[in-house]
Length: 163
Length: 163
Image 1 (cartoon, rainbow over the protein chains, first blue to last red):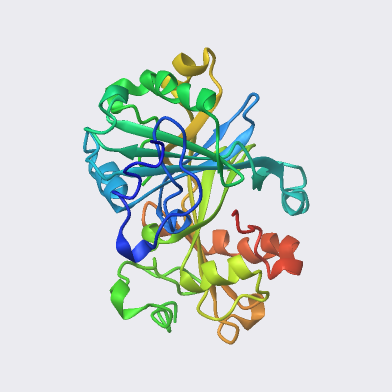
Image 2 (cartoon, rainbow over the protein chains, first blue to last red):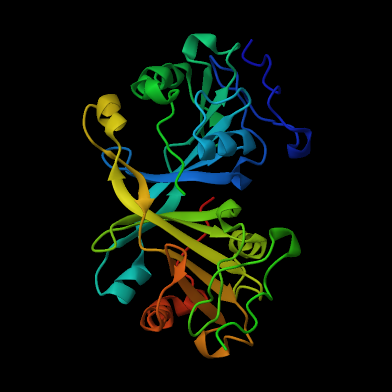
């Protein structure tokens, strides 16, 4: 059941997804997502302690740029994150440490996939997290929608397009 | 003289650059740069106080992914930056403020253009900064190369590809 319907959003040119699908939402890693365009960037303090980038497929980019809400079916938003790492060369350039850059990947890679019919019970969004390429467990996936409900007024999406 | 040779790196498909060229290096804003792929992300503390994204044209992305040094002629690296803004919805989701996102653009948009012959006296790189679409002044452009010399061992590029 977790494998059902996971290829609906894949463009043929992007190739086939392989690997395991996530629990609950049945999502595989979208091929080529690292080549998608940038929506925005963020820094999480606290335990997350990461630098992150939000990328989007073409549907996501168009909707983000135009401020379209709700996002159309077929939208996929990717959240990449890396450890918050000091940049050594910066100390030389500025005379003190003030620059922090993306270190090794951290906190997994996450996706939001819009399918208003399939994911009707979670605001039209399927949620996915992969750690080192493997789907996170069901308990993790149960936390996605409740947290994103804080952004219900923006179709459950925290990020905004950064021009 | 500031206008000489500024179109050498423009792919026909990307259209023509318009607007003013920068002092010293004679660089115009590369068309379509906001659609380029992501190299990495960063946060500058201190007076800069921004969140930033490093994007690259295809030559830059390929070289960054493969770790090619020096970067080949034709490489263009773009540095976008935005104010470091608290995300209100995050407080609701996490119970405290810990998420910072890209606010309005800040600290201009910068480019590094590789042309080992044309820019031989500055490590093969031309440097450009635009504030609200207008070239920064000559004094600003005189600071680029000395600062980037701190990264001389990496062909004067601070960023590293974030997988």
